[in-house]
Length: 326
Ligand SMILES: [Zn+2]
Image 1 (tube, rainbow, N blue to C red):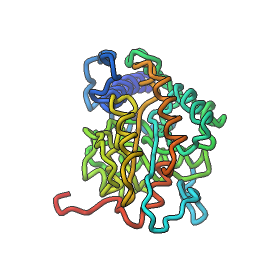
Image 2: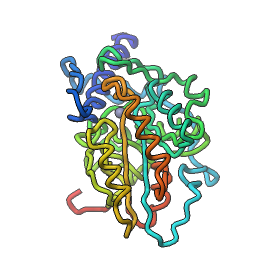
Image 3: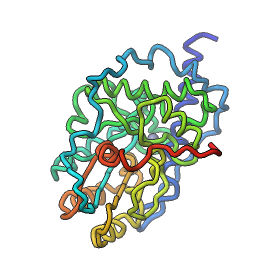
């Protein structure tokens, strides 16, 4: 089979799997008053079609340098001092680096809210999934990202190709490649080495073995899951951090109000995540702006990026707890 044909098959399979992963991440969420748009999918491709040998072609691997003692890691400049006083921390983040992020960034800038994390897959620059998703879903090109769209914000890893990592069947080399090559690409772009990621595909594709592989073989120290807890407890383990809320959930505002009203006797976390393309699915741009304004203007909270949150608590919260069953 010619290389072009192989690439074409691989890319079709990748696009489908990525779409499944993304749509899976949103689960059954919906806007307050209407049913979510029905998203149809094609027949699944077989796993054999998407081998990692094919994925790691020259086009999508990186020659970025490895880290050195001088490497600057993300999240070290929050300016927050933990002095023993309990605080309420807020994280907000978005996955996939699609063009809707421009509007999100515009909203954040309007309220001078820069403590926001964007998770990017640097192996998928410019990829268009709009047809499969049913709303615009176009990732930024490399040039667009290089132009400084995310300047001032936290750019973190969503793995190189966004394939659910359990598909690599615990092949350490391949999982490491997905995480570290994405991290190196981000480092090359920003001069800051990422330490956090969002698991592609979300919770259905996360395993403790994958956490262990990431912990032992990469510089990634926090992995965000996708199941809303609606609680404000700090995570027990960073490599599978479950968020408090998702941007399209009907309970978003009431959850956040509960957080604001709660008595703060120990450190608390409100962790919210979402995708830019959901704003088109649910026509919820105004709703998101209202939420961003609410966070940006909230008193008595510490707005931090996901990387900053990790750095602030890394000495107390383990990234991964070894379990004999792992
Ligand atoms: Zn994603």
